[in-house]
Length: 504
Figure 1 (cartoon, helix red, strand yellow):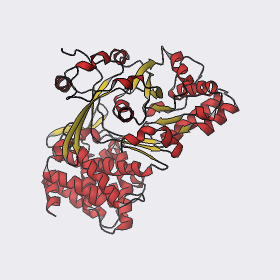
Figure 2: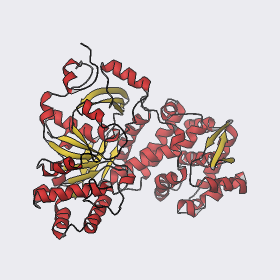
Figure 3: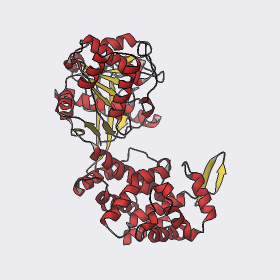
Figure 4: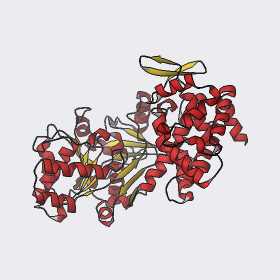
């Protein structure tokens, strides 16, 4: 009998050979997590970890999801009984791998606008121990919010209202404290959210007893999430996946294999977050700085030093470039030989290289379509934040210029050569094609290329301390090598410059 649509009553009809299905007893597990946000990142990472732990009997708790915005259709969660399919696709240790999982971690989805009292009622549940959020970076901001509104306007206001209801329900008991883990992509997200919530508590005059309970018994944890979970796939991909699975799923999402949720915490946090034992991708440590550095330098930093060069070489996507032997060698050598040994953080080089090998698998993932031109957004600020600290660290350890870094930097300068302005957007031209330069420094480089002779472009750019925070012409041999690479790019092209490296 055919399955029309994913739901709990249809599970028996679904072919277990095609997808991992939840056992019936998982639906009766108590609600332990309150989650602000319904997006694919949460479903593809934290909710995936909770679901996996439940299937292993390691957490035994479900998630109440709060929908805070009017966007999207919350009713689809009801129609599917909170079920959704996660299709995991990618490479692991160079080999293709994939798995389909029907996740049952979500028990229900409540609308903050229409069901606020139901959300506050969750504070009375003694099993509720954890709050997770992903409200985008804009969500963690202080605004004067009245928590007695139904609901408060801001995410911190909603969270504070819930915590105050929790405090009253447990009568200030230490056992009623919560572990709060924001996953928004900002540095020190837990500490920033804690500071905002505590300031809001004062503004709302919630009293010293609540303030003490909040300070002593609620833990706000910094965290870092890392997994590519694109938005809903295109129609053709959806159709193919649903044909393979044998049912329709309006919440279906695709993720890469790699997963990381690094959480700053101690033994108490670890005991509450018992789902961490189900997957090595959840890491709980007193300091997660190393994971931020590894991601920032090896994944993001390599992207930044490669994007202009890849674009100039004619590659559209990361996967396409990684299929080219010379470019793949450039990326690998840049990451493992030049960036990894010079990360400005005290860590074993081998740990950096092991992480880099995982990143290379992610770059080669045939199921993720990541365009180079999109990576060039705010190219200059990314170069300054992600890569210049690595360059400076390199020169603390060596006195010779890093050749692949120099080529990546030369490609950046060439990419930033604007030739015209259309409707306020600076445009470059390469190989007969026009492209946009979406960068706060686009006007600066437009003028630089007009005012400086080509043989002095590198010197003018590198010595600008307002751009880099340092005079990069003081680094032995770096300016000369970048100029040499720029000359090669302009006279012979990007492919020749990359091939030259491969032969060296």
